[in-house]
Length: 86
Image 1 (cartoon, rainbow, N blue to C red):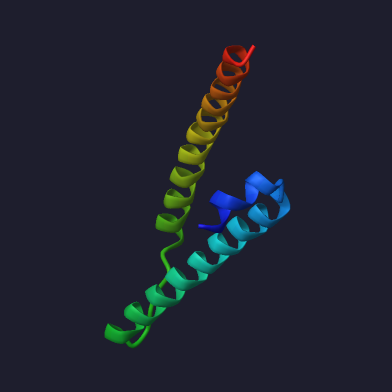
Image 2 (spheres, one colour):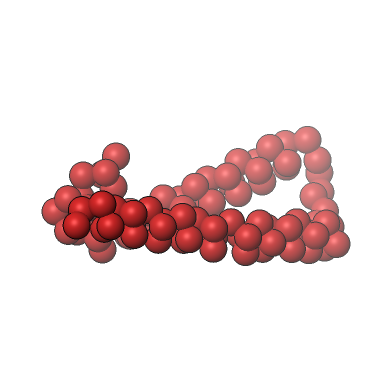
């Protein structure tokens, strides 16, 4: 919610810090929940390197395709706003 109001006051650094903290916090929260739930039913957990590698590759592909598309859409929207304000 803070990220919606602070940019009006040109506090971009505070928004970046908030978003970074949110991502790190969510990652640690979901890792902790996963470890807790996985350890509740099993005596020993195993880590499949091949499956982790496959999912990591898939994540990189998705990010590699979506991230440039988001930046492109953002630039097109900004260019449209600048062109219409003239």
